[in-house]
Length: 385
Image (tube, rainbow, N blue to C red; front, side, top):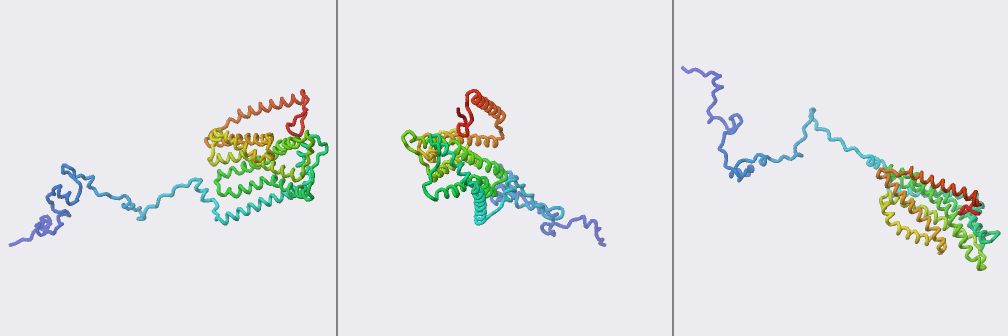
């Protein structure tokens, strides 16, 4: 009689291995004899050391970091990209700058030129009201020079019928308008280039306009009260002892006056030019001082070109102030370099020294007026006995 097997025994007793398919041994392949290192090396299955042992670190396959996908978040969505790099203030300001095409730049330039000319036109109309009084002021250096050489009733000569009208009512008001409107013209020039500058560069607008216009007007005043007067006295007095009577025409006098006034006014812009060359890092105070002898030579050559006469006296009247202005520009350049390096100029010591010099000058002036018989006069050197 044959009994059936217990089901538990049937589960425990494995079937013969011959009847099992390949890969049914718990998910593992049957053990095989290890191959020789030469066979693995020949088949390219991995590097081996010289002693025949397997180099596990060198045998691991290279996994590219970029090929590994990013781990998904809890919701199954890919992670958010990293936040962008914060922009610097210069980059933010550059993005906010006004972008203009070439034609828009030309239109802006046209508008600024029209505004500058309008300012000059208004100043011209204002100057016409005082044309006669302005001519008396302009002709005063000639009258003073003629008095000093012995002419009691100094007058300028009219050679052509139209020259008084063209000089007194056209050219003189235009010259006055250029001086009066110079701050407005400089402002229009700055307003044209300011949109392309950073905020820290636009801070120079006020000092640029004030210094440029102030130096231009200061140069005109220096030419009127000092250089032009001395030059006329010297030139008109050359022939006094050899029976030459000076006769100065209105046109010749005014042309000489304009050349001297405008030339000296432009020369007085030298400190501003040196300052902006230093601001653009083209020159430095050390470079300017090291090459000052060449600068003085160039200044003397320029003074010889703009001087109305070839004499040495007028050459010195023009070249000496230009040399002084050059060193003023070097000082302004030095102050700019100190500001960049975070250093300060000893203004307090300089103020004490300047105050002492002013006190000494005031004491000398008081002694000259009270004890030595000097009195003040309205022309250079402003003291006379």
